[in-house]
Length: 199
Image 1 (cartoon, rainbow, N blue to C red):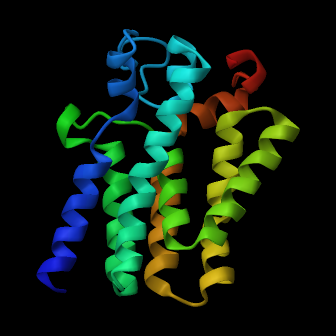
Image 2: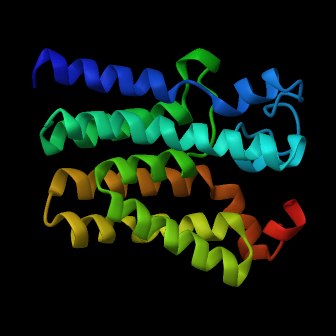
């Protein structure tokens, strides 16, 4: 890899480390999402503590953190390995942000942004899967888990047999499932909240 490649990956992590939830809540005079609601600095918890407008801004910011680094790598003609590592770095930056004590969100929106950066059709397919499951079951975490579970398949179908991207997408999915382990336990007990109730 070249110096530019290492710079792309490092910048991606730093961009991912910018916590949209914390910044939005501070600017809007809302409680710190790490100490209110579920304690998770992500769009869903911002919805709980600050309402739809704050959550929408947070969601957009979290997606852009994944989209912009991956898109930049794509436009600069990065190799599949560098593109994959750039996307993964942005994702890990969101989960373990350097600027906020390595305490980040669960990564759904940022992973979706990364997938859009890989290829717009991959992002679109994953987003459509989320919307379909959310519409039917009205459970945000279930929609996220199902959508990301299929994302490596979407990468393969759209972009072909590119092992670096397929494996990296699968790694992000595994990490996302781990970050949602408490949600999975609530889903199994039938106690996970509905999107309509959170709204």
